[in-house]
Length: 468
Image 1: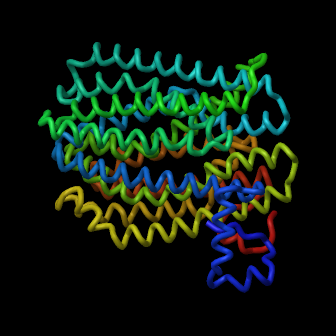
Image 2: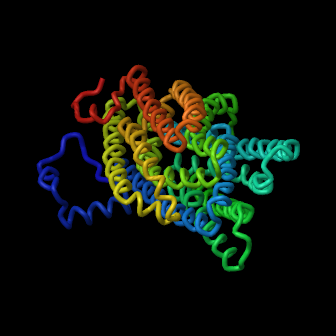
Image 3: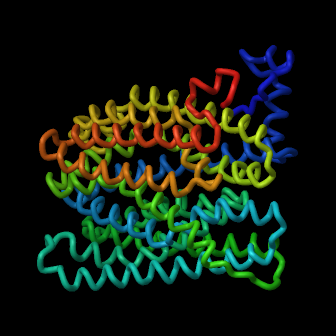
């Protein structure tokens, strides 16, 4: 992902069609030992993208293995239960995970070390307490309503609920890592270690001839989640011990929660956007159909990793540039971030559509029937990519309430559309609804950025030469 200035030099233009050996060596050195803020940002974006690509490969392999080992029915049950757990875990940290990404660079920029110490402690402790309460309520709900639920889902749900506190604390620590510029600490444990451990544990269970059931898969997921969080916590404590000196802590829970709760609405709405289609399909259709859709959607969702990687790396700099009052630098950087998001996303989409059927076949011969789902979903993903990391921009520049309103409206609209279209059109109805809502939400966020911040985001404006 090459960082280009707005006014390239003649030497840079000379190498547009290809890089010399010296250019490649110099570029690699900048990634390993960044000398400037742009170099560090580029390194972070590349690292975030590579982590998500590696994670995708491991997760994809594990999903294929699980589908093959368990069969469509048991795999569909596992997908349904684990999707719910990820949603609840992602909601129970109260939005503090995203607040970390915004506040840590701001406090460092303004040398507010006491507030930084207080935030680091308060964020994790509050998320852990909140998530434990959510898990307890979930257990109570299962006890009360277990008689009304399909028996096949009850035991996996009981097992999976113990992961909710760990998912919440992992999300907050991910935010601390990204807000501090420690991308590996934030991203590797949840996105690489956890899926890798699930795959390894399920492989061991298969070798030991344990039942390849949803209960076994959830049990492996529980062990993997707790282990990954333990690794992440140890790595983070080591970094924090070296970066933040011991001293007094200043607490501002009113400020932090006032900021994080709109971010929670965004996180929750986005989780619903990612999960509603699978949950509605599982409700109206058979587990086998949920498994088929899940395989197609997760395959096409690899496109979104570019958006996530750029947003993760750019969010810290959006906040820092805003704190400095560098409006010209912010406008230029917004143009760059949109370019970095759209063109790699387009290339990834073309590659995935080309390889779509062979990739789906890996799950099983029947899964290739989900290819039309990929053709529809890609339209929504590219529509989002064309607006760049607009939600990251709004959240870092104090427009989290407006962004939250957009995401909540998107989530509500998606639920309504899914409930209408899935019974009528099946899997294609779910894909059409998801793609429509995703593209519409990205456009609304771009409109807010233009109206409130004077920043014109769409990809076609990145080459217009001006910014409003």
